[in-house]
Amino acid sequence: MQSFDLSFLRFTFFDVLDVVLVAIIMYQIYNLIRGTIAANIFIGLAILCALYFVVKALNMRLLTGILGNFMNVGIIALIVVFQQEIRRFLLLVGRNASLQRNKAWWKYFFGRTEEEKNNLARIKPIVDACKTMKESRTGALIVFAKYYDEEFFHNSCEYLDAKITKRLLESIFQKHSPLHDGAVIIAENKIKSASCILPLTDNTNLPPQFGLRHRAGIGISEASDATALIVSEETGEIAYAKQGKVKMNISFMELEKLLNKDF
Ligand SMILES: Nc1ncnc2c1ncn2[C@@H]1O[C@H](COP(=O)(O)OP(=O)(O)OP(=O)(O)O)[C@@H](O)[C@H]1O
Image (cartoon, rainbow, N blue to C red):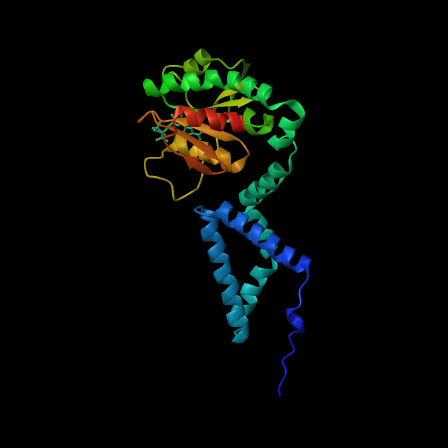
């Protein structure tokens, strides 16, 4: 009787771990590029790659040569084309590994209630300002950065380094204020700067009513680990962008919870 050699099916715990880790990485990459222009570029590259193997198998030398040269510089081309996505992926890895971001450790060492109490006091002027701006239909874009990256923000911004107060936020975004255009950056528990020009997202799957303000808020949350709060001038609705994803029409309770977590 014929016997089958199934020795290749033997696998160890580390083989399983290997497959699981690759699956997690692939899923994270998929999440990062889903809905962005990078997904289309990725499909384009995959098609070119498949075409290369087809023409090679058919022994079509001219096309094989041209596509082969393209493949030789492939890794450099990939780094250039996916620069933003690689940056976001590394940020994601770094963010999850950071001890301070791990609130369980933070709370264990520094006490949960005290931290939350302080946080609510810090958040209150921002939420109160949003309430007023929502009522008066004043457009606003507030970015919460984990740290103030001088190089990233300084060129296009007006540096303030001011205490966070409701009235200051309202005055900045008031239509006749010279600083109302652009974003306010909050970092290190201060209003660091105003009137900042942010990178726009190239996500093609956003609702049609999203204009530049929303695109800038989502863009900064893709390009860095900052989050962004957007008050729509048209509808008064409040949106919150984090890691390239946006929550629309959030309530003040939700806003408080989100800021308590991220700010
Ligand atoms: N790159 C940018 N960075 C920061 N702010 C920007 C940028 N581009 C536009 N803005 C801000 O967005 C405003 C224009 O918003 P627009 O009407 O296009 O946005 P929207 O997303 O439709 O929001 P709204 O609902 O408030 O109209 C500008 O006046 C400016 O303050």
